Amino acid sequence: MTHPSPSTRAMVPFVSVENMMRLVHHVGLTRFLVELTDAITDDFKRWPAFDKTSRVPAHSAGGVIELMPTADDTLYGFKYVNGHPKNMAEGLQTVTAFGVLARMDTGYPLLLSEMTLLTALRTAATSAMATRALVRPDARTMAMIGNGAQAEFQILALHAVCGITDIRLYDVDPAATAKVMTNLAGYGLNLTACTTPQDAVLGADVITTATADKRNNQVLTDNMIGAGVHINAIGGDCPGKTELHRDIVARADMFVEYPEQTRIEGELQQMPPDHPYTELWQVLTGDAAGRTRPDQITLFDGVGFAIEDFSALRYVHAASQNTAFVQMLDFIADPDDPRDLFGMLARAA
Image (tube, rainbow, N blue to C red; front, side, top):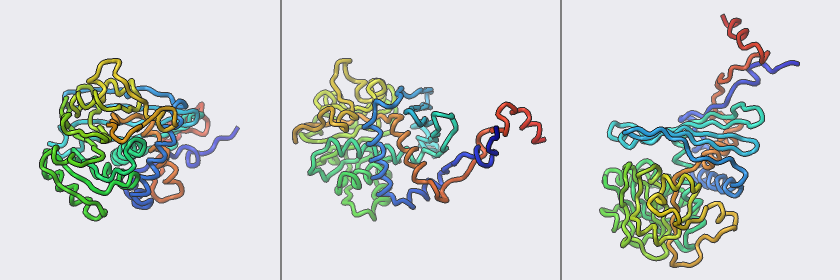
């Protein structure tokens, strides 16, 4: 039996941060967000086909490091990701990540990719997916509460996928709001900087919260939320961290990704065990109702789930094929004779 040489079998495509940025611009940011939203939607519609487990965390005083794995019959994917809110004060990213996509039949990796940028894109696409399924059809105004690293991606995804045009911005740090105003100046959006969260949510059809403090917080209080609003609560992504007053959660209809994880990390952790929710995948397949009336308050309790990362890796793997936006890494020890790993090492001398 002959075996392919390492040059033909063991090299693994790698998408670096630089090449991820080049790939996004090559595809076009709007198209990338729309297609990524559709890719995640497609995988959510086949939710029962996936192995599912809550992310595996390692907590410290400063933050958390997590592994997020999932697989279907043919592909396996995982993401390594951290969340360290204190990093911002030190000039570091609060979130960094990388991921791997592999074949289930051989275990060989198909792709190694940066996922710091890709996580922001997939998180925005997931919010767009939930918003598209749950928002009122006439929605045009969005309040973005928390104007950090996620904000521009969230806004552009809802603009591209859901037709949102008017953006009301609030952050405890005015410099963060100014950053978003500058970054999005050329995108044809109506941008308004607000000095209070109450001002930001005034007249909003969609409210997205993406704050970074690792604690129970009340970014929104019950009196701010009017009838018919859709809320994407995406900042509460670990135990002990929430963004909404409990009364908002109590009167909204809640939609979640993976309940076992949301129960630990999302707004759902504030509620009793019997608090009702609907799994978002069931809305997307038509097996459960989403919005049923215009005055309904819908809440997507988004904590981020591994299937979204799987979808993102699958999309990038396809989009980067036959492009210059990958590097081939000698990543797998793969001797000509699979039984002779030592011989490969010895010959290298």
